[in-house]
Length: 323
Image (cartoon, rainbow, N blue to C red; front, side, top):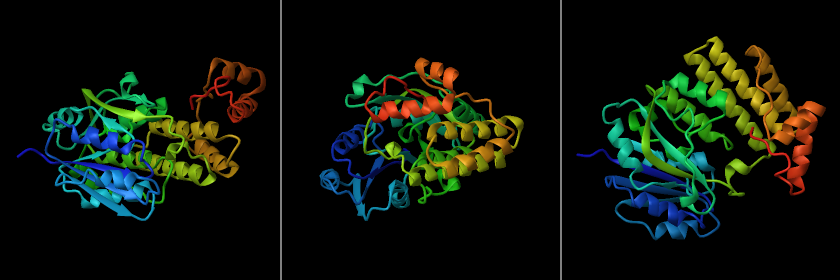
């Protein structure tokens, strides 16, 4: 019998997108699927839309608002699949994404499948699939070093996880909000034997949603992101404590300092101590050509303050940053 794949969708106020997301899940050429939607206390029409899809294949659960990680954990604890596919309620899967990845993993039972992914705003046909260094087979440590040194990622929908690996990794950390996925997938990668990249399989990552969790920049959100870095670096160093992994950890915290400045001075101070503990970082601040010129003239801190003013007053193209 073909392996069962569980598609797990955490939804919160996703009314504009959830139907399209569910359509992409139901359109999969791999038909041995269960789809579980956990509505996390939405105040819009998300739950009603999801309930219209309920069937023998689609189960919809609702709970009081507890956060994305809690909703994903609730879905995982219900599911019975041999493979786990997380899918945010505004992202999409190509029709053969799961079939290609399941086929690839049949001979690699303790490895993870990743895939090509592209960003889009409203029209998924506009997504651009731009190869990056993570688009290859990698060992667990090599994957994390490559991702963190290069500021690269795989968004949740790009992965397909064997249940045995998910069990070893443990549940999502419900104390986290911002970068909860980065913390979770770090544990998943380290629980696996590595990643297999599946050329031709595609997922679509919706960007530009102002209400998304990744757009949150409160102190609580930055604290969550910092705690995710602490957890991730600790887990990496427990696997391999070497010059290269310590450099990678220092780079991660240095990038955090650049990104949050001038906010959260308490977290920046803690991050600076980690950078020093890991023997320093040679990571320069990155940004547009104008940002780089201003950095040379006045230093990166003043340049960053000007950048923040540009964003605040509606001129984001003047000094854009790629932290």
